[in-house]
Image (tube, helix red, strand yellow):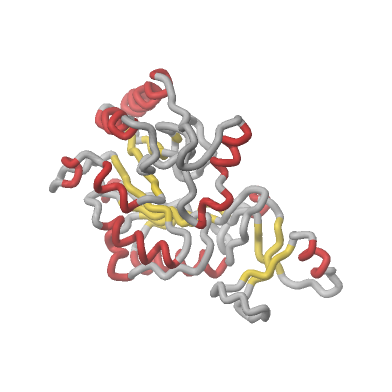
Length: 294
């Protein structure tokens, strides 16, 4: 839980519990698992989940009162250390969360899941009726490659939320979004992977999504490059040694790892998340869904 989060696209983070299981290629370098292990918590389907006391939950109420007093709306990302729609979530946490959602109308609860197919049977039945989905609940699906996009975006748009969004982080491949469905998505977040074993993100994948969103009128948020940035080959530089040390990689634009370096492949150097930054072609992309989607 954090009132002052480092995640650029939300105001607060809130966890109904800690603990999850791996279900996607995005989970392979899971920061939440690494952090939990540092604190001595196990991970996986059968591992016990960490639950929280009343004071933790009441922070939502405090944030809601503060937002109401200030006359603003605040975004709350749920969950950063788990998945609310994991079938192994502790009994009762979803029902408890629905109660707190109803008590905090000045908070927009951003429910992001890698299990978008579970949502319809896990939210209150009344939410699925016409006009029944709460105005302050956004629903998002994590999509990191074309396979997940083809499988999960149709499931996302079946949910009658006012704001549907995609989190494409870590972006692991080129993705073409389904044009026929784009009008039903309000927001796309894109980012590269960070952490000790982060995989590089080809810049062409990011630019393609930016352009697709611009063409469809979708709000686009670029969160980060991750640990890697594109570089030019420099005459006299010992790239072979840098590659052996894991500091430089060739990233194929189309994931076709045929061993040849082609003109649209990228030479990427690991520089760290902070140095890589958030600028994309010289500008920041900080778009958010506005009042028009409420």
